[in-house]
Length: 362
Ligand code: UT7
Image (tube, rainbow, N blue to C red; front, top):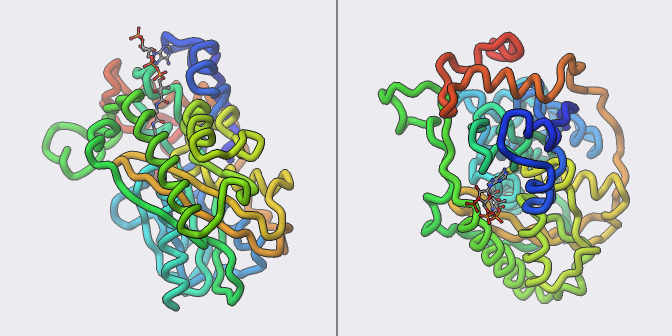
């Protein structure tokens, strides 16, 4: 996780919002703002995941970069992580289904392992939303944060890992969540990368997210002959505490069985589920053989729910000393630096050329 913490009070210094509103509507108190690139976050996460699995980078034959935060469209981001890791034998794929990108990456890597196309896969969930957030829009700016985490999947004769998945997409609400200003559709329209504004219909997304995640969770449990009582831990997408509570209620799982990170990290889009999974492991909430339920939704509106049977080991085989560079500024300074490159409508005149970030565009 990036170390710089942006509090609700920090947000109140430049937005008409309050700690009370944000906590009561979302359950969020803090989120992180990265002082490095998404590639650096991903490389640290992937290196640590490989060390936990006792693998070398050269053992990896598949890297999936699950995210909607890319440094560039070409070359893809997964290849940048591959280069930084020295994973010389890997295939590298970027996968963007917005907030569900990590979970869809898990399904994709599992399918590729099952069909023999890969044996050792790294799946990353990462997001650097602070760079294209419209910091003048309180409807969205208070909700999101940066982060990254990664897992290693390996071929195995034991039935563990991703044992069930239900995936879909509610395109009727496709227009309810859109980041304008990034993509080919904006070429020639006088908008440069970073000139982002957000279409965001919170209440519409809220209702459809609850229904889709609850229905997908019920379906995936039915498909695999398990009930809510059999589930040891729910590791859900963390967009709003109230959404999580509603999904847990409809799926019949008590909140005591739900892993929560929304209070300290907010919504990190594709990074939320893997970060929550790592924290669940590190706090002893995942036991050998645990049955995990992982519901998610995101722009599109893509949705899914996954069943994971954890393997027999919950302790890492090794550790990596790969770490992020030291933090030399505050989260609020980082955000103010981005804001300084945006006009009052969230438009950027110069892209991200401020001194704080200039070094990252090498
Ligand atoms: O990962 C996928 C991403 N999308 C989501 O997760 C979005 C899901 N939706 C939500 O989480 C919720 O809909 C929100 C948290 C976005 C909003 O909560 P809500 O209970 O649906 O809010 P509301 O629509 O009932 O209330 C909105 C009011 C408006 O004021 P009026 O029109 O009622 O006077 C907003 O202007 O709250 C106001 N508002 C704020 N006030 C203070 C909106 N944002 C803020 C804010 N601070 N940051």
